[in-house]
Image 1 (tube, rainbow, N blue to C red):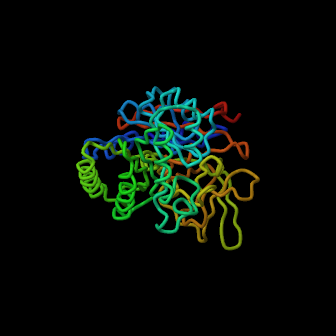
Image 2: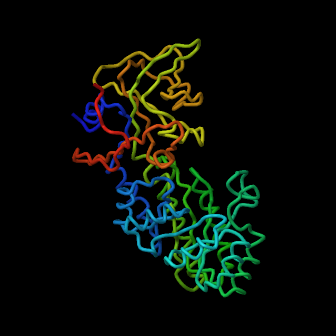
Image 3: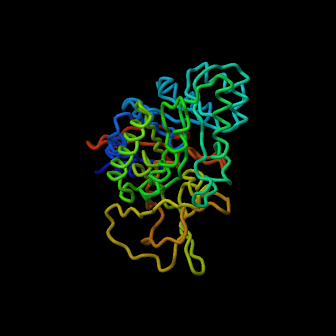
Length: 393
């Protein structure tokens, strides 16, 4: 019996049977890909918003990588997982003075987000190094996350004033931090964003590092990482030569670190026929795998046959729905899948990033357990569910 069959058999009679399963071999492959950047002065910082499982974060720490956090809760999580202060980057918007003091006291690398935040920080008298979060895309492709409509970062035309404000307050702006985009599959587009980041960063007199963020796609086959590796190595090597000293490159993979290494499983509890389509209900909710609730980006689905042989597809499109009374509780829409029966299992792949970490208390659903599968076949429970594991009597 393989790992998936074992878990399905073990959980089939549980009240709350839905669960997440991670593939440790795939995780190790993803780690190795980002560690393979040839530029010698490279640091990898994982964005904790994508996945906050302490066991997985511990694996990141053991590999010598760092953590990018944007909240006090995730800062405390990073510290609890054993990350030293020099391997934590904190960037957010609208920080309070109390939070600024706390970060400096903890020795955390802090990135400021606006002219106002720089002035507020300077008034605290904390003479320290800071990073500046930049908005590099005032003239880029239309996106709510970059350019004039973005709420994040110091815009191009504000940068000189920001650097002058740092100088006047006795602050050394030693790092730049940019957001280029998300799910970028074009190496040309990624490199163009990095080139713009370097152009702006060259204005920093005390520059020590450039944080180019992430943006890597979840599916590694859609992005030529070898080409990216060669081009960013050449860019950073040339940039460092021009600056007369090594400038550290920081990259922040988020979804690409764990996204393709996990799957979510739920059991069929009902099938309803409607005119023109079917509803297949599972013992879970969109709140338990909520990427679609935020992004309307449904995880790929597959019906698990469990050795029952091939079945014909439903003769009409299928919506996979949760077992709540919320009218928008859809886990997937308009799918073409084999016919299912109550008790069958459905797999939702690409579930390792922005899935469990986005689970909401809305609808009162339980937090499902998370398991880690080793190549050897060993299974480890890396985060228990929050409901008693009692069999239905």
